[in-house]
Image 1: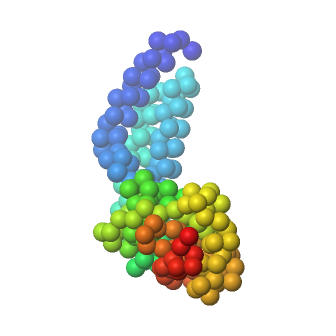
Image 2: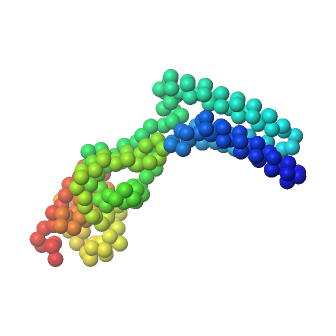
Image 3: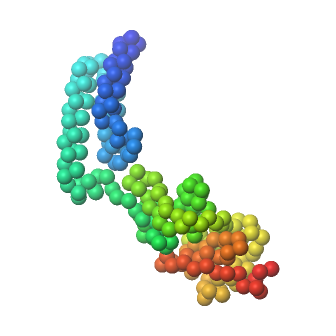
Length: 224
């Protein structure tokens, strides 16, 4: 296939895609849902087929884009009129933290772990779960957070029932020290706690497996 032939088709494709994106592309740039991804894949297939298949006339691409744009308009109209269809195709937000309590079902549905959630929060300048009043993952995958307005710096010591040895070493403590501290609150084993973080000058912030929280102030006999 001559290179000039491909070049001409690329220019035609670029012009058509520019017009298409001006008409339909604004919502792609602000939010992507499964239907939008399918839309972009179909458009890519149309463009690719036209460029590399010399038997297909460029007018066919224009017609295909017009037809696909019309189907998009029809589907968008039906989706706006039918809440069930909108929910099935667009999805819905998932609560991760409500009133300071971890929503473990929400974590499971979102595919997030506590570790990955903490990374997302740190990227927003939040270094302790104790700061978070509400958090949810939006349909575009972004996490939105409402904080208590009080900032803390914490070190994770227990993550989903497993001790974090790096965290223990970071605060110059030992596993035995942590076990004694949680035993003061009636916990017999590390695995009984879903999450715990150490906040300097505050104590140990604990979240159990049902999402309840409490702050353990360091007893005098464990202060050293």
